[in-house]
Image (cartoon, rainbow, N blue to C red):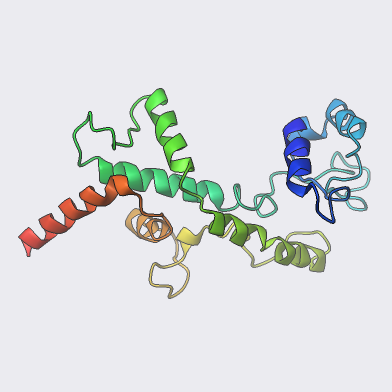
Length: 211
């Protein structure tokens, strides 16, 4: 909570909304417990967080947010973590062509190796463009929720799971997305990095040799 408030305050400093911006978290129990809310109140944010104000009266969700809401948590829960995973898997796949001790490798073997690979990937993806793209969709999400009176929005998949679309853009896959189709689509959003350049050339050379 302190991090959310401090970083948001820093981000809005000097802007027109420096003293009026709102913060948001989904239905994490620790966020909505009384002690946590008391802390927000002490920081002046009891009424500067997105929450239900009229729905779910008399239930455990009164004055709270209902459950996990990835469509509201733009940029990370919604698509950002998918981009991070796609980048990690893509970079690990390409660099697996190198020797095990090559510093360009993205290792997934041990927890320390995996953490190091995630940190390297995080510096590249999700990109700033993708983060902005997702955040700018929030008004559309909110409008559709309002139109449905805060209830389930039928026939919408806010989380998107873009991997559920055919790679050629010809419609929705049913009933299940095949792994190679998912990888093909997700890899299209993965930024190129120098560490995989040689691996791509190795693959091209191998394919040409088979032709």
